[in-house]
Length: 234
Ligand SMILES: [Zn+2]
Image 1 (spheres, rainbow, N blue to C red):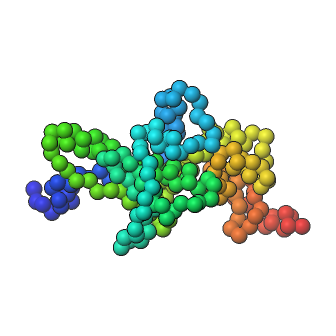
Image 2 (cartoon, protein in one colour; image 1 turned 180 degrees about the vertical axis):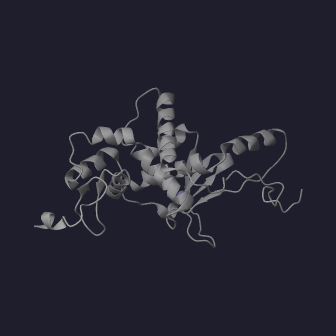
Image 3 (cartoon, rainbow, N blue to C red; image 1 turned 30 degrees about the vertical axis):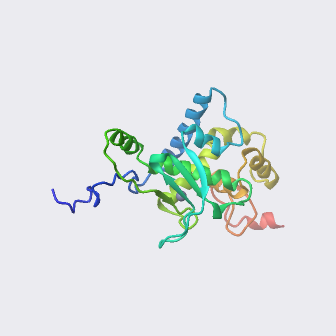
């Protein structure tokens, strides 16, 4: 076996706890987010409260939350950092003073990284090795949610959206509401404690509504009817 083999870390003392990128189906991300909500609900033996308190959820998963200054590196800005073996999420304090709903979304995004991208078996192995007196280094996980709209960042953001707006809850809060009416959407937004763009993105992703780019007109279902816009603009 050669040292060049990709499965062998260059540094023998390093333990790889960050999973390499792989495609994860949207439905799987949705299921993982619901599983976490159900896990916490079972643990506290009470129905979940809304809006979801993402900080509380992180705590229930045994994660510590902290805030600190994280300088940008050669690849750009860093929104947050996860120290896997310390089970700690550090939010970059430069990202504070965010509009309401945004903070919850950021924490839920980091929970998404913890669930989807950290190899928690390897984190446990780190502790076992440490008990045996074998010291390993583990690199921190760096979140760049601001700059990237694809790959792992997209996955974590989709997780956050499923986590704060799970399907079962959306089905409940839309009862008696008109999804094509902004006033009704704002009322739902209030109840769920998220931003209005979080909500419209989620509803569009589910195919419940569609809003053509640059328009304020909300259409029911997947696609805006072609050539019908004039009817609404009269
Ligand atoms: Zn991220």
